[in-house]
Amino acid sequence: MSARTRVVIAKPGLDGHDRGVKIVARALRDAGMEVIYTGLHQTPEQIVETTIQEDADAVGLSVLSGAHMTLFRRVIELLAERGAQDVVVFGGGIIPDEDLPELERLGVARIFTPGATTESIVEWARSHIA
Image (cartoon, rainbow, N blue to C red; front, side, top):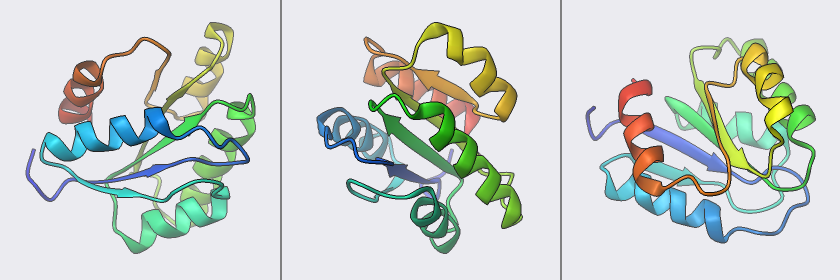
C-alpha cells in the first residue's frame, strides 16, 4: 500500500460521539494512509461529495445512532450514482450482528463492532483498500 491511499472517515447523522472515530482516523494516518476526517453531523450527500472531491479509495462511516441501515445504504447509492462504486465502504459502531448480512449484501466491505482493535482495522485496511 502506498502513501497515496486516501480514506475519508465520516460521522453521518446526528450522533455526536467522535472519540472512537478520531482514534481510528489517527491509527490509519499513523499506518501511512492519507485520512480526511469530515467531522460530526455529515449527511450522506456531504460524505459522498467529499469522497469524490478527495479522490478517496475508501470511506469509513462511524455510526452509533442506530440509523446504520439507512446511512450505509444511502452512501452506497450516492457513490453508485456518481460512478464511484469502486470506493471501498466500511464502518463501525453499535451495529447488531443480525444487520451485518444485509449490510454486506448492500456492499459494505466490513463492519467493525465494539471491541475491534485499531491494529485489526489497520491490518484489514492495508489488505482491502487499493
